[in-house]
Each structure stands twice: as structure tokens, then as C-alpha cells.
Image 1 (cartoon, rainbow, N blue to C red):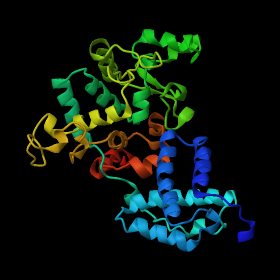
Image 2: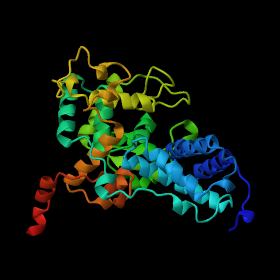
Image 3: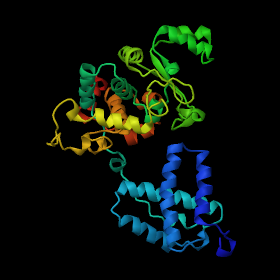
Image 4: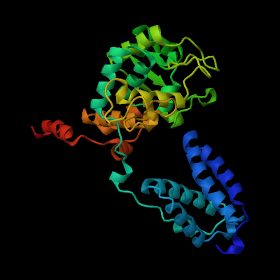
Amino acid sequence: MSDDELTELAPEQALSMWVDRQKAEKSEQTVQSYFYRVRQFVEWLEDDGIRNLNELSGRDVFRYDSSRRSEGLSKSALNNQLGTIKLFLEFCVDVEAVPPELPAKVDVPTLSKAERANEEKLSAKRAENILKSLERYDFASRDHALFALAWHTAMRLGALRSLDLRDCYLEEDDLDRLAHEGDVDQEDLDELEAPFVYVRHRPQLDTPLKNQGDGERPVALSDEIGELLQEYIEVSRPQVEDDHGRKPLFSSRKGSGRMSKGAIRSRFNIVTQPCRYGTCPHDRDQDTCEALEHGYESRCPSSRSPHRIRTGAITNHRNEDWPPEVLAERVNATPEVIRTHYDKPDLLKRMESRRSYME
């Protein structure tokens, strides 16, 4: 395609068109990440005087690449950012704003499997210690129920936040609701057992799932977790509704009545700080440690985000010999994604789990 065949298009307009296209196919969180990455590129183009994408050349792409690398970004961050820029330019090719050969000019760093897999997971040993501490000092609290459910199910943050009381089937009597709501025929109820929770995609009511409708699924719980949730609901749960008249499982007397994603992140960062239930492993003075101040909990080297808890939980399932194909449905991820991004094994435990095959 020659320059004469290109159609004039401003970078900002192209970004708006591209984001609208992504909204139909990607989750809100993914679209937001894409937007921020490409917006940096668009702002750089405009600062450089490029108001029409027809003028964009491979040399310009190289200069932007160099400017990002000079900022000291990690290889993984560069892979994410430049990879998104390449997707954006491929869209620009489709709308005849740039020549077909331009996306190939983006030098996206290739990551090895080890580099793609972030090792900062929550270990099973630490998770067990946290659960023991919560059971002893904060039994059936919201923190206890939230962390225990996250570790037991490896749910994403959005799925945890989305749960309502009506999504919890903790006793046999709760199963009748499934037939009443049309999820199962009455004659099939005898084949079901409680406890479990049913994760549902409700974007119009402010609780979308990352994989939208494909993320909807029932998730089986152990009797122990079912009893813990029941105790939390009866004793500790704030008895409030959200702005849509729903009764969130993890409710809050602040804000909308449903815990925000930020609030859940904060609670996980707090719960996973070792000094909350013991001594600090980092030799910090608890009177002056900034990670104990409100809003700075993530600055503790040992605190773990919801994603790292999910990573550790999936790894623990695999160490307990759950096959990736079976685990995939439980945690709403493909077997390949589990192997690549979440499967960070304890090699000695994995060796022991393979001994049965030798026999």
C-alpha cells in the first residue's frame, strides 16, 4: 500500500476507535490496561508533532521503542507495552492509516517461560500459617472468610467481589433455589451436593467477570469452608445491601455496600503481612514501618496481592496432583495458561506425587 492509498487518521481518533473495538471482545480491566499503554504512545506521537498516522514511519517506531527502554522498564513490562502497541498498529493497518509493514517494525522482547512466570506467589506454608492465625485470633471474620475462600478456590479478585448471598449454596436446603431460578431441573437436584458457590457475570449491576459469560461457573467447596462461610454470614457479615439492592457476600458499611476491588486488595496486603501475627522477617521497626500505615500496606516485601494468592493457590492445587484440565474449569483458565503462568511447582513435592506412576 502506497502513501497515496492511506486514509488520514489522527492518533487520538485511532485510539478511540481501537478501544471501542476492544470493548466488544475484552474485559473492562484488559481494555483499561490497553488504553493506558497506547495512550502513552499517542501522547508521544503528538508531542513529536505527528498529527496524522499516515506520517508514522519505522524510524519513529524505533525512536519510541528506544525511549521506553531508556526508562529502565523490565523486560516483561516492555513485552506488555510494546506488544500492545503492535496490536494497535495492526488495527491501524486494517483501517488503512499506516502501511502493512509497519507493525513488524515493533521489536517486542521475547520472554522465556521462566520470565513469563512471576515467582512472587504466596507459598502453601505461608497460606497455612495465615489461616491458622485467622482461625485463632479472628475466626469467621470477613478477613478470614475472604482469604480462606480465595485460597481454597483460587478465584480472581473480580469473582470474589461479585458474589452475593444468593450465590452461596452452603446447605442442602439452598439447592431448591437452583430449580426455582431455572438453573437445574427439579429431578436433577438429587445429584447435587452442597456446599458450593456459583460465580455469575452481572456487568449491568457493576460486577463483571474477567472472561464475561465464559467465567460463570459453580465452584465446589469443602465442608470446612462451607461452615466457615455460614458462620461468617450469620455472625460477622455487615447486614447491608449494595446500590442495586443486592446482598453482597463481602459487604461493607462504607461506599456502595459492596467491598471495592481496592478494599479487597488492601485487606489481602494486610492479612499477608507476617508481623500482623508474629515477628517481622525484614528487621523493620513496627513503630516506624511505612507498610503499617493505611494505604501503604503493599510496601511490605511479604505482602501479597490477590493475583499472587491466586497464583499460589493454583500451584498448591497442582502440587496436590490436580490435573491442569480439571483445575482449569475450577479456576476459569485454560490448561496452557495454568502451565505457563501459574504452575510454579515445588519440585520435590511434585517428584513425590509422581512416585505412584512408577508402580
